[in-house]
Each structure stands twice: as structure tokens, then as C-alpha cells.
Image: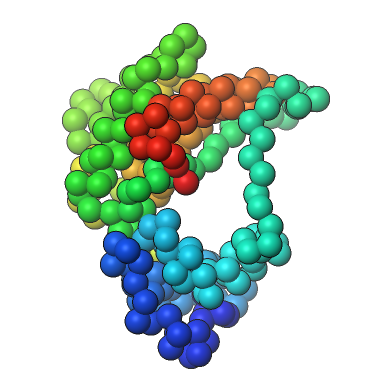
Length: 243
């Protein structure tokens, strides 16, 4: 952020807001509060909603381009391909690979992102996601554990399984508002085999994770693609899209 936020850029953007009222100062607050190091750069800013990337494009575009090895959101388009049949190999020697994991973040269109969302919006994210997950069948079927309601035994089991995420303590995250109202409307969903997980309202609306012990990355990716497609269909059916 500091590399691209010149006085001229700040002057051009400082009075703008997104439709939800998100400002440039809110975008950059975490970077202002937590200056980086020349050799250890962090992004230094956050988006409050989907429109942030357009309203403050003069800052976000060059930061994205530097962070993602030249990707230009104005001239390039990221292509998502969830066709697992295209994976030709994907098997790794289990003498050297303990476990395999594929994960992504997904946010629901029409709701503010975690740095800006209200308590009501966060609860709406949880409701929509849990409703979508409740429709999964077969090897994807499972249950949801709300952080504020789980028993000590459930909490310990999730810790033992290395599934449980903690309240943010990093100044970069707390300055960005990521720990507000904790643990309200946060939770973890996993299938019965504990190989497909969804984190709800952690650093994104959702973190979608497929994992298993061993080196069968092809199977992990196939499950990831299948689960993401099924959950996404329910998102689209209720809210009309997703980011």
C-alpha cells in the first residue's frame, strides 16, 4: 500500500465512498497502524465490500498487480476451472507427503466483507452458508459447529483434529476489524469423514477446504471441485451470485 499511495492518489480518493459508506481511510487503517518492513511487505489495506475494488481502483489495481506477479485486473481475467478430470497425475509419494489440502476463500455478493460487515450481515452470511451446506448429500454430508455454542468436548475434538480457528490476535487483523463481535456467527462445518470443511466468517465469508492424509492430491481436488460446485449452486439460488 505504501508503495502506491502517493499524495496525489490520496487526494483523488479520500472523499469517495462505496455505496455502503466504506472509505479510503478505512481501507488503509490497518497499514497505517502497522507499518511494514522493506524486506517483509504486507498488503497494508483491506476491502470493505465488492465495490471497493472499483471505487478505489487507482490504489487497489497497482497493489493487486504487485502482489500477484503482474496480474492486471483491468486487462486480464482470472479463469476458474473446476474440472478435476483435467488433472493428469496428482499422486505424491506418501513416504514424503503427510497430508494434502486444497482451499479457497469465497464471499457472498450483496453482503459487506468481514472488515466492514455489521453483526446482522455476519449472521446473514452464517444463515445462508449453513442452509446451503445442509443440502449436501453422500460423502459431503456433515454438520455445523457454532463457536459460541460448542461444548468443551466438541471444541477439544476440533483442536485435536487441527480444524479449529482462533480469534484473531494479529494487529494487522484486529486493526482491520476482523475480531469484532467475536465469536458471534462464526463456526466450522465439516463432513462426516472430516475431509471437506467450511470455515464461516473467519477472514473471509467462507474458507472452503478439502483435505486428507496422504498424497492423493487428485482425489482431494476432485472433492474440492464437487463440493464447491454444489455449495455455490445454493448460494446463487438464494442471493443471485457470489464474489
